[in-house]
Amino acid sequence: MRALVHRTVLEKFLLTNPQWHAGYQDFLRDFPHAYAWLCLLDEGKCRPVRLDRKGRMASHAAAGSVREESGLLEIVAKMMHDEKKVGALPSLYGERHREKGVVFAIRHFGRLKAFLFLSRATLTNPLTSSVLLFNHFLASQVELAYKNFELNNFYETVHPRALALSTIHSVHRVISSSLRLQDLLPRIGRLSAQVLKAQGCAIMLVDPDHEYLMPYFSYGDHPRLTHTQRVRIGRGIQGKIAATGEYYLRRNAVAVPFIEEDIVGVIALWSKLDGQPFTKIDLEILKSLSEQAVVAIKNARLFEETERLTLGSIQTINDLLELSFGGDRSQLPVFGKIVIEIGKEMGLSSRDLLHLDRAILLLDTGALALSGNLLQKKEKLTKKELAQIRRIPSKGANLLRSISSLRPIIPIILHHHERFDGKGYPQGLSGEQIPIGARIVSVVDSFIAMISKRSYRDRMSADNALAEIESNRNTQFDPRVVDCFLKVMKRKDIRDQLENMRLKGKAVSIR
Image 1 (cartoon, rainbow, N blue to C red):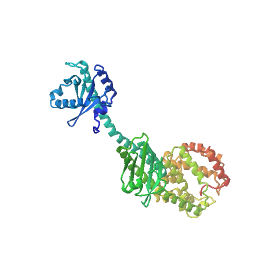
Image 2: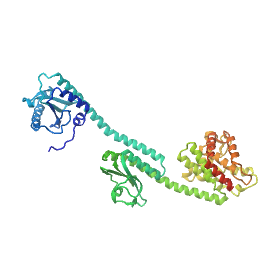
Image 3: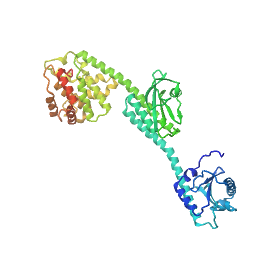
Image 4: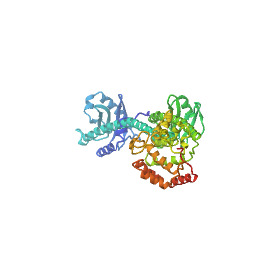
């Protein structure tokens, strides 16, 4: 049996082209008993390929074809030693009836690539016009075959790299929109599966002691790649990848490590949706994706650690405020709810909303720098005492600057007593100069203050407070913020929370 050989450009792109099939069949109508041989030349050797009546590779050889093939090889050998004969093609060949025919030369950029023999064709010299026309048709089809080859080669070379670049861009978007591992890893996993058209994906991360891989995300099921329990590093497919940093590529699975300075984890995918095997191109794409993903994983871990420290700092400050002034801060969730809902109405990002949420809890931080019981004083404040009260935002900002993770909320705390018309404090900012978070807090803080009981006055009704807010749009308050505030205040859940606050008769802030 003849050994399997690599298919040439002519086999892949000429003999499979429908245009070639149609033209070849039209030509053979004048020669009902003829058939063809394509003699492919490669490194000085000739490989004959028998064609059927449609111009494709024949599925079986006719009787006597082995002898005929041998005869063609002899003809080719002689022609290769006589450049004049090759240059004069197409021409007749053969002496006996069964071996007579016409031979065509197949060239590309002047280089001889193959011969096409039309056997058992009754022809006369000079050659008929149909043969000469077919020679032109053959040349055009050969040219088209090589162009299709170049386009296909370009596609196979460029497309995976374009896909990899697109994947990297997608991962950048995931990085910018995902702050926590619980949000990030499912997005990375599903994005990877989508790009590589895989049925399932599993992501495992190395534990802090670098002894085990911990399962963080998976969808789909695989007997060797999905785990519900930790896996010791060095065991199993993912464990060995985590131990060695090597890549894993099989027909039905591909896996790569997340590598920064050390191995962070492993991502594995399996079973393509179209049933095709994973390729080296798939591996390269997944490697590119993992290189970007590991940056996101590192940032997410840093964020979560910073978040833990930040929340601890916020809790400590709140505890100090309650111990120092005995203020009841139980209504702060209502305050925060209204502020966040306004932020959503105004289209703020999730990061800006997070900063707003934290700022609400720390608005009164500067009060820790006050001396005495100034905030509990029932009598009218002196000018000096009022000046101290007005310095609370600045003192709070100064106290929080030492906590780097809280620096984004400082502009909200510092400027939430500014007025839209520029008559506020501490810096007299106006309009868009005031940070949007501070403009939102200013409206809600004023509203909550009006409906809360104070030592020196009674509370105002919610309706009267809403009317007061609306009457001060464009002067004290940003009109856009007021519009969103009034919209939020129409919601039943917000009104119910305010009613509960009224019934409890609590003050919202310590001021």
